Image 1 (cartoon, rainbow, N blue to C red):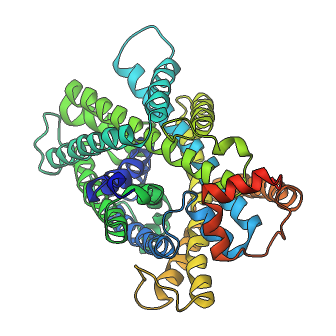
Image 2: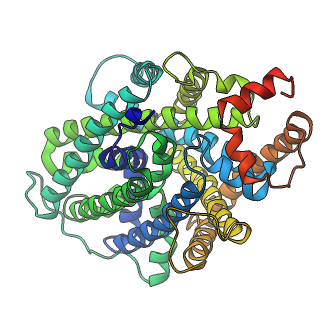
Length: 467
């Protein structure tokens, strides 16, 4: 099977960048910069460093349990048992990503309808794009890598160029005179790390493709880390561009700050260019999302954590039921948040909380496996003992606490996340007890978790009628 490993470091970087760079990130970038000015860069650096701790933890977990399809689901199963696994995966990954991809698609539709004056509802643009991506994904991994590489290069290139034009005041628009710093205290900058966190979320989607990557033990952690650093540099340049061309207050209240910046910078040309970039970003996010989530669903179904239908694959090895269901669900969320900036921002923050909880679980998994299996060979191990995972746990918990500067919104976000987790917990409890017939909190031996991923294990369980 050696000749199949055809993805290199570049594919890992572009997968990471492709999922992280999304139009919803541009909304968070505009809101963060609009609220505290240029010092938002400090919050971005802090958030990026915190996400690097997560990448480190996930790389160590991937080194201990390589080549598994469900990623975090399998790590958590081996550490904490089925209940936390189902909550973190269905909530933190499936729901959260379907929700954020839906939000992305609605920002895209809003941009397209404001640039192309056709008498059709904006949701039509979303529908056309979703069908295109669904079909592309049903054709398997090679198609996916080709689309992803091209999109990541064009996207990052466009953002850097637009940012540099603004940073060096080379635009055709009028340069705005405004204070560089809007924050009155360091505390305000610290509390904005939660907003900045969304800018770097999702690099770990490169892990499910690690079994197709050459020299995965080096290329996967390196590719994900490089992806985050490339994004950080690009977003810093963008903030400097915003400072010269868009009033902070306008950025803060915009549903599509990138469109506003494009227009302020280069007039109509800038607006059209930014729409092109936004279209690329959405194609890229949806592509990574549909592909990654369908494979995660397949991994969980193999472990009997989701209905078996998610494990069915077509002749190209694509989990087609997952691809179709996920595409349809994304479209539904796009329809709900169609064009409302408040709804978009709120959904982004709710998604962030789910994702942060999943990241905390990843750090805990590393600490548990180090205690359980101190001598197991790890091709990648985080330096400095438990310090980096602990920093990750504390930092991420802090961000959940300060998810919004507005107390009312903060309580609403906690309420939505809390109710969702409770509902998932009840589902997980009954599913584990009656369908998986396993103790709810008991961790599963790592060898068994690895075996579960093998198609023979899966076939045997079905044949003997255990599932």
